Amino acid sequence: MGEPEVYVSLDIGSTSVKCIIGEVSDEAVHIIGVGNAKSTGIRKGSIVDIDATVQSIKRAVDQAERMIGMSIHKVILGIPAAHVMLQDTKGVVAVVKNDENREITSDDVNRVLDAAQMMSLSPDREHINLVPRYYTVDSVSEIKDPRGMLGIRLEVDATMITTSKTVLHNVLRCVEKAGLDIQEIYLQPLASGTFALTKDERNRGTTLIDIGGETTTIAVFKDDQLLHASIIPVGGENITKDLSLVLRTSTEQAEKIKLEYGHAYFNEASDNEVFDVPVIGADAKEQFSQRYISEIISMRLEELFELILDEFYRQNLSGLPGGVVLTGGVAKLEGIAQLARDCLQTRVRIAAPQYIGVRDPEYTSAVNLIRYAHADNQFYNKYEGDFNQPSNDMMLGTAQPSHEQEQMEYQQPAPRDDYEETNHQPKEKFSDKVKKIFKGILD
Image 1 (cartoon, helix red, strand yellow):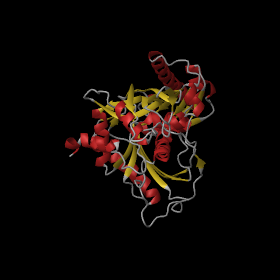
Image 2 (image 1 turned 135 degrees about the horizontal axis):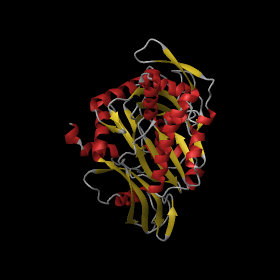
Image 3 (image 1 turned 60 degrees about the vertical axis):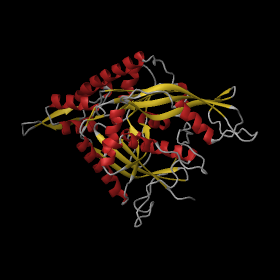
């Protein structure tokens, strides 16, 4: 049994910042540290206050560190779908060898991926991920992994994922000012959908809808590829604000009431389940029923689902046979699946991690960043010797109660541009490239 690998994911959301520490041993994932801090300095998925965001990151990281007595140095960073663009690209190289054995190696794969990245970008865009769809060796196409095959000409059809250079710079600046190094960067819906959806759902065509506090992310997968990613600037905070106004109570109380008593499906809400609400400016409390607030909640969610349908029609994505998978903090509202089925007229299910301590849809993105990074590393051996290591006075697995082991569904990730064989020097990581680009600014 080898040494456990430790990954730390960082999910910077509009309403909360989540830091998850995962230990992976023999393909079993253990969530050993969880940090969840209220997010300040972020609006609608974009950073508007650097210092406030840095403090939110520090609070989340500190919570996770305190759980297990482990210092965090490097993180797997998730980039939201705001300002993201997916572009088709193609790379072609000749397989050049000194002998007659023209076996394709990881070096050839790197060269063809480098060629695919040569497409010009506008000055305000920055590349974050390159996801190959398939390779072609001579006249044979639809190849997932060409290494070990013989050929003369190697081609790749891929999807280049880019984001706003300004948005990326601001995120990097916040993470670095929080005292953290970036081990790798992934597009959040790409990592989340790879594991929140089953293989059959990813192939048939399925939409992952992540409903957060201030934004809702839409990610469409088909043929095991991410086809579309976008953000709608509406989320659970809209429900909270409406409840606060109608019930004449504080935002904090409205959020608590929403989570404890809220029901998204009006027809199934109860008139008998009642609760007291402290009223702003008065000593007395008023009493309301679950059915009363359900009408408010369902109306807001119906508006959101209408916006989602509009996005489907604009992108010609309606009628996907795999249906819809809901996740994110709002997805834990009782009755939301039934309401979504009525509004979207398709099959709907809820996705949530199945690990002790994070069995909540709001942790889907942060947990799946760890799973995606581990699968990436297992296939390409990317981070050897580059993990967060536990302190000398701590033994992982004995620092806190044992956790449930879940066997990971192994997903072979698409070959990435920073893969090298173990007998080569590792390629420069994307995060290092970005740091160089912004060195003058960050200094």
